[in-house]
Amino acid sequence: MEKFRAFRITEADKKVQAGFVECTLDELDPGEVVVRVAYSDVNYKDALAATGKGRILLRPACIGGIDFSGTVVSSSDARFAKGDAVLATGFDIGVKHHGGYAEYARVPADWLVKAPQNLTLWEAMAFGTAGFTAGLAILRMEQNDLKPANGPVIVDGATGGVGSIAVGALARLGYHVVALTGKAGEAEYLKKLGASEVKLRSELDLAKIRPLDKAIWAGAVDNLGGDVLAWMASTMKVGGCIASIGLAASTSLNTTVLPFILRGVSLLGVDSVNCPMPMRQEVWRRLAGDMRPAHLKEIARTIPFAELPSVFDKFIDAQIRGRVVVDLNA
Image 1: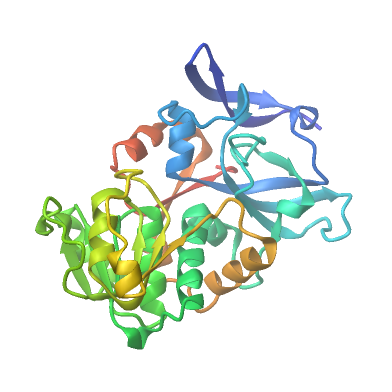
Image 2 (image 1 turned 180 degrees about the vertical axis):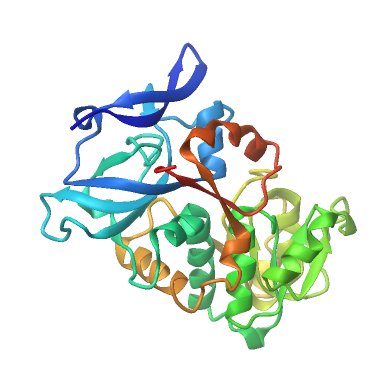
């Protein structure tokens, strides 16, 4: 096979460099399945890896891209055949195993999911890790008995990739969704996605968080951590649940046990990387079905592969709304 394009990230002497290179299949990591990549995407984790801001690369050099979708070229595993539409997220792809920022990828068969028939390869990456994480968060809350009748659900970091899809998916499921954002100018966007209300972070007095405050929320999806998560915990209803999926603001959590022991609040950790395959397949089935946001095309935009380096700093600086899909054939 001839050489193909890839975007490789290299770390040496505590400095990170990233750029386009030419690769061959022989240079890819071992795996039973070779995939012709159609689309990848950009997540915050991708931006951390490519810019070196996060120090998350787990090898000296790695083809980036933590997600990809495409078509099977060859497989030595009976579960996959040439021509199958597949997708991959998680498993340290793009930071430890060569990832989706290449025209071809080779991965273990255990990491691949067959794309649901009603999900296109573009839609798979319009969701990507961000959408999968949002779907997993909702599934975890449903398993904790969250229902629309229980009361409103708040989503912070609502204009980001996870937040946008969580807002759209929860609205599609019939929840009263309150979108919490620091961007006053994005209220129209969030309401179009399905938010019933938009709340600004500037309205919160995070310097005076009480151990228990007025009970408001039946559920919450937290992208931020830190003081906002502590405020969420203090304002949950009895039996409410919080899906913790991010640390965009802080890794700390300064709260008390009172919400958990006096209101039975559940703090649910959401790990999209190591999610077991049966649950992974269920989340993708739901994203392709009843969780599919009504305005997915409003959430995601597409860029050609050549423009990939131009978006990483914008992610780091929180200048990106929604999702960015990367077209490997453009």
